Image (cartoon, rainbow, N blue to C red):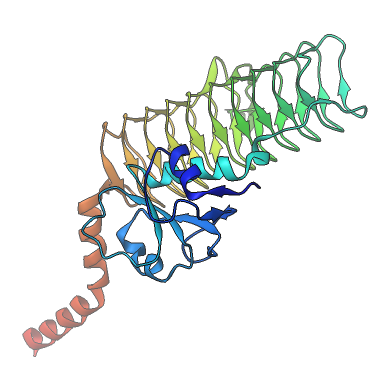
Length: 342
């Protein structure tokens, strides 16, 4: 961690500084946890109370808060996008977080036919099988398994105990967190004579550039062809993506989502926590599915859905409000029935 002045940070995030330019900042934290020597950020009016009580002396705020009553004695850095600016400030203040080791640990096991760039890191007890390739600047932490003919692009980071089955292709600048499994067999069985017989899974997984995959995610290989994760998509922890699923670019897949086989998810789609999607569906570009929703039919581009089965969000909210009134409505119905029959 490095110390900077408020002016240094304002320049780095291209913000407009108001207050003490020489204020020293040696860290960052949320509004409620920050100390006077740490910078924080404010981006939503629902956190106004936290802004008022925060001990942070330097705070990144939206450039359109001129009408809001701000506490006195603070140094403000005004920007268009406070969350993005705070991310830049974190990178500045904590440069070591993006520095990875280099070299091959003597306890790594690498097949002689694997192609390993000279500036990678391969940690202890990692295994790289025949025909695999690891490109320049990539980091494989301890216990990573790289199967036969796997391709890993440049500047990717694969954390401990990740398993990449054979033939998996990983793009550039991909981050895969601990315990993820890519390329395991799809869940495919054929029923014959009352028994389930395994269908060979001979496809692969392809992860495009700038994807991030959370801890303990599983992405199944395709039965034939590809399971593909589009460039820029971010996948949270504990997500399951089944065989032959296609996910577009820059989508957000939040924790505990399950996507069944052969579903197509478009670009810029958001699947919030615990969304379940049945197989062979299409979710159009820009759709937003609220948490704990069940998707059982195709979703048009731009739709916002909630519920199980999922409905348009406004309609689902009205139904939820009515559900809360059911006991009262039932009691009234019993009274009316008693009056009619008496």
